[in-house]
Each structure stands twice: as structure tokens, then as C-alpha cells.
Length: 139
Image 1 (cartoon, rainbow, N blue to C red):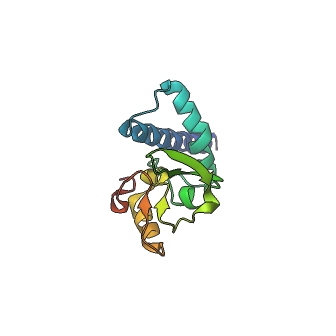
Image 2: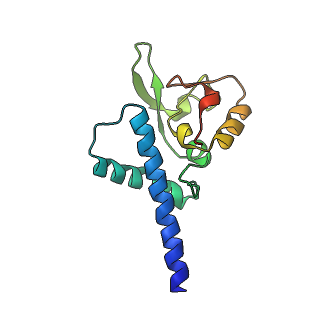
């Protein structure tokens, strides 16, 4: 039994580490945060990857399940402003089917799951960061 628990713990840690790596890779692609990498890894681990993994929303390769986006329980979302900045608003103020979607997490969700989600939208939408919807999703 100890061997099984050890393998399960190793798989869990591997999933979480791959999830963290994906978050940090995405941050680097968008200009990074300037934060200390060890601090940033810990923030992503606690704030996202461990929580999402405990809910079954992290795949073995570290990509996220679409539920991390659709059921993530966020009460506040970012949206763009006319001046090019962003503001935080209640997520309820715009539904996922609304004209703009906060796409940050969708970059980390498996592409096949993102495509199914996008196809389910009732009206055309666009990403708040300008990414075309057909380019979203982790490979």
C-alpha cells in the first residue's frame, strides 16, 4: 500500500508542477509579472493549481479542464476599458456568452475543451486580450 500512495502522491505533485509551469509559461509569453519566480510559483500553486486539482480540474499534462473557467467560482472578472486599460467588475455583469470573455484561463485549458465551449456560446464573443477565439487553448 505504501508504494501506491507514494505513486499517487508523485502523480499529484507532477500534475500540480506541470500546471504551475503552464501558468508561468503563459505569464512569460505576455510579458511576465516581474515578481520573484519562487514567490510567483507559490502564488500560482496555492491560488490556482492546488485548488483546481483538488476539484479535478487539472489534467495529467498540467492543462486545465474547462470547468476551471466555467465553474471557477470567481466573483470578479477583468474587462477592458475604452482607454485600453482594464477594470475589475462582478462576473455576473456579463455572462460567458457576452460580447467579451476574460480569456486568461482559457489559454491554459485544453484546446478541444475550449473549442467545444466556444461552439456553445449563443452569440459571437471575443477575448478581452484580443486573442482570436480559434487560437485559444493549451496544446
